[in-house]
Image (cartoon, rainbow, N blue to C red; front, side, top):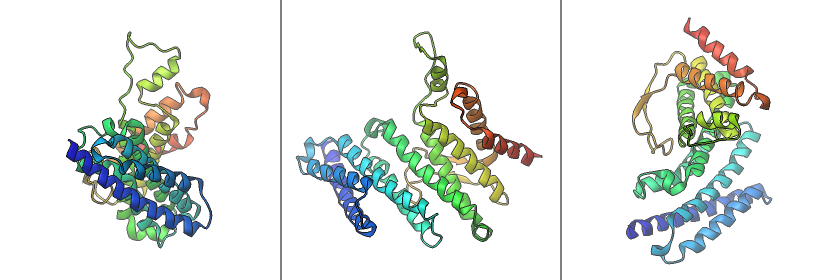
Length: 294
């Protein structure tokens, strides 16, 4: 175990140095200080100090958390730039791939070194959810931009399908990290609506957004990739990043989209009715799914 810890510490230190160099390049290109880059750099400086201590005494969980927080801040800066520029056609594909790679490193690092059979025991549910959410949301925003480019769609709908499937899987992965709270006599809630949300696996607004994003991406898949056959996918760590899912599975855009949007509408018009979450788009997409069956 000590050898494994030492290996992880060295690898995290190497990755931290690479990220720090990347942040330096981003700061110089921006020409001004940015809050997220400053915070990411500070986390990596702290990481460097901790890695300089006795390797065997280092806590890999603390080091991974620092590195992950830095990556989340660094990539957030770059994502905002992509969104502001509406994902430039000549460079966005490579940049999105690069960001997905950065956001996948913490999971890959844990898996490669067999640090623990459960990722959540080392990284924690919230960080794992955040990593999956950020990858899924990034691909959602990128695909949203691509669906507005008619000429690109005519030539590269198969590439759009790949982005959609990857993005949907990241969002579904995010929604499945934490198990729904089982309501029974041993669990008491003062707020019945909160209890209903937790029993449905809804722990935050981000979980609701992930459901809506997944459903919308399924709609784009059915609308723009209709001529392609459903594919069996094996989630890997080579191109699209790390995933907890290793089995082959077929992603049916209509089936997945209907299931998750029906749940979204049910939650929004049930326990969250007073919060006035908009369900108009979700209902329109559900109607599209129904019409496409006929």
